[in-house]
Image (cartoon, rainbow, N blue to C red; front, side, top):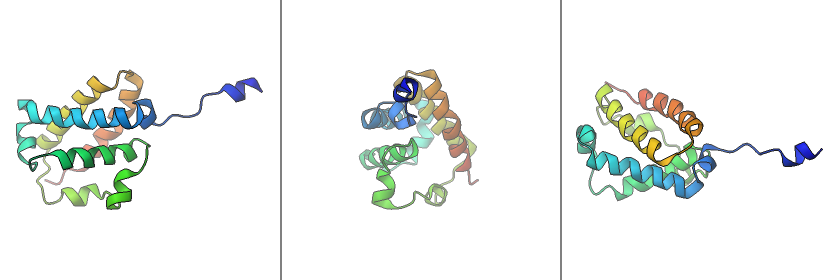
Length: 133
């Protein structure tokens, strides 16, 4: 009986990285890297400036995607990521630059290796799904 009482509840990735604070930090670090690392120069060039609204929308999307509150959906509806990205040439090169920024941010923000890998695999699949050229 005590084992059941003290058994850990399943934790979402959102909770595992620190909830709102950790998710916001991950989203912001992603854009910090995109804006400063020459590896992502072509990806950066596709984004409108200033990027404050993009940072916020990415945070809102990530919150729900990681198992937290559905902030993006409650404000904008279903993300329809592929449809939203169709106006842009999403090439393998753009995907690699996006993943470079995300993985670098993930490595810096999320200290638990198991949690990082649990996020890295599906986000990589999602990024690769965006390819349209």
